[in-house]
Image 1 (tube, rainbow, N blue to C red):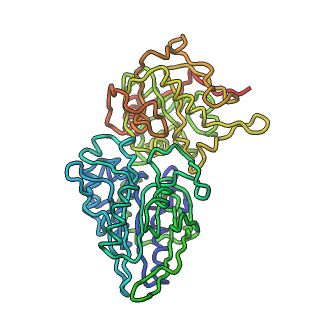
Image 2 (cartoon, rainbow, N blue to C red):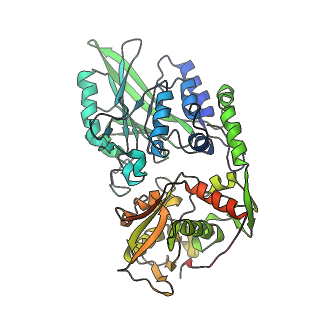
Image 3 (tube, one colour):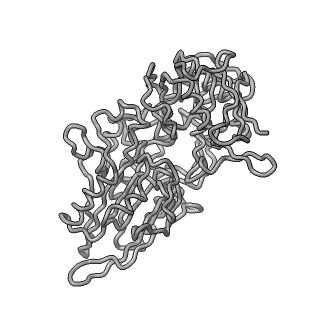
Amino acid sequence: MLPIHYANNQPNDVGLSKVAALIAAERKKETHVIVIDNGDLIQGTPLAYHHARLNNEPMDPMVLGLNYLDYDAAVIGNHEFNYGLRVLHKAVQESKFPWLCANIVDAESGEPFLGKPYLIKELTDGVRIGILGLTTPYIPNWENPDHIEGLRFEDAVESAKKWVKVLKEHEQVDAVVVSYHGGFERHLTTGEPTEPLTGENQGFQLCMEVEGIDVLLTGHQHRSIAGVEINGVVIVQPGTAGVTLGKVELEFSKLDGKWRIDAKKSELLSVAAVEADQKLIELVSDYEAKTQEWLDQPIGKLSGDMLVKDPMQIRLKDNALIEFINRVQMELSGAVISNTALFDNVSPGFPSDITMRDIVSNYIYPNTLKVIRISGQDIKDALEQSAEYFELIAVGEVQVSSKFRDPKPSHYNYDMWEGITYKLNISRPIGMRVVQLEYEGKPMDLEASYDVVMNNYRAAGGGNYAMFQDKPVIKDIPTDVAELLAGYIMERGTIEANVNENWEVIWD
């Protein structure tokens, strides 16, 4: 919403308040402008978290922003479910615009769970634009089952085939716009797979297999894509956090009484150096003040060093920050083994005086914890998966591998473990990098079962950790990890930075 970094309140060239100014400029230039939010609206910042978890009575601040900007529609994203269906339905009810989702349906009736699969916008000169909403159906692989109870997630491509036909034949639209909260599973020009074809992203398949789509709006992967067509479908994806506004321009002419598209193009409009909409900032100022007050609450003190000075070094050798998070997870769950990640490269770590701001700046997702029962082989396979995070370049220098850089940085998919002793040699071939794996001082029994605590995203196999999918859940802790960490520190008053050096990454 606001152009700031919540970790330190420094200026940041992002946010809806800046996007607002770009929308206003477009509306001044053009007679016909349709504005759509493509999903992941109500989760993602301390402002959103504070509203959802601590002050949910007022209108959702992000919905307030979209209402103020007269959005035409929004599409459900996977993070819309993070706070449960009650919070989601409340936000939907507060919206002046419809939320579109064709392929998430009521499990009993089979009808789209929010009622509207599509929207028809008829312009003043009679042009009919059909807008179909689709969402990645991979959500059950990440989300807390309680948050999606009673819903069925259908394949986006099959759903598009059904509803695009309705738009073309029944609604007689002149253009079909598919707003899809999902990304691209294949290289945009070669068509080669760029990730495991799980169905999480089906953008390329939508363009190739669904007849009648003119425009495909995408998201989810946080990529910046414009000026590209796939099989005649113009596509756009505008990054993340309101860094750009995706714009698609269609030109029509009338021939034999029917409108046809003569030209179409997509581009990205950057918010850099754009003046934020002050009225919008004022509208959310009360929410923001409460959020800032909450963020500045003292939690406790730290003895020692848990600051992140170099994210790569954090991921190469056991360190106090990751060990602390793992130890809290183990203590609160009773599990003897734990894993966690350094979610991004801007995590600051903990200073000596810890506030709530420090907690949410480091643990940025509303994850909960699960203890699952897995085999020693599963643990080894997971370590091999994490070991693919690294690649060696000239003179033994280590960098993040392209698999974890493209199409978007996914640092959160590299895990570090406590409760086992291990060593990864990244000069060895992929799949053969675990050179030491011990439990209680002995080589880990790959056939034995172990109870491991991890966040719910990973426990469901998120991040291509298929070895964790469908494993027995021994314990489910439904409280957000950020709250667990804060409570743990408050209870003790002072925490200590400890490192037992149970793991490291090496190369010859």
